[in-house]
Length: 199
Ligand SMILES: *[C@@H]1O[C@H](CO)[C@@H](O)[C@H](O)[C@H]1NC(C)=O
Image (cartoon, rainbow, N blue to C red; front, side, top):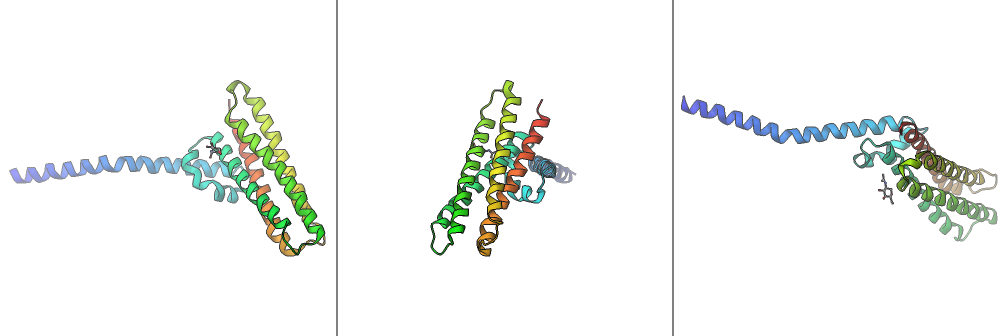
């Protein structure tokens, strides 16, 4: 009798302990699920949802369910991609064996990407430091700048569609620029989404 009640209370304690230990991780899983759902829903509002998920899902934990952080993270990822491609192209344009026409297109592109980097940096800074009374003004500036960045990138990629460009160059460089333009377009959609939920 004494020993069976000991076993019962031991089992009770054990199951109680299990609950205490398991509940935080259940809560964590729930939060993770909520964050992932938010990311999926937000990305589904973009033109390139697969790219959106691929480029941002590793940041789901930091973004949580904030439309502002989602838009900022998309801008950050786009900026990093534009900077690395512009650096790569700048190096490439100084390499040997390129036709003058190709060098010209590369240099134009590096300049256009530079403009788009400038617009993206300005947008990120503005999103991070506005007074809440100026929300409408801030968001319309950012929408204008990110649209301008997209135009610069499109001008750059159009330069590579012209005849006489080396096919390999088109594939390597053109592909990267198309991706930057798609990331930018997604960032713009996420900024618009942030604008629409802000009161
Ligand atoms: C974006 O980058 C800025 C500065 O590089 C950083 O402070 C900020 O936390 C980043 N935002 C997100 C949402 O990743």
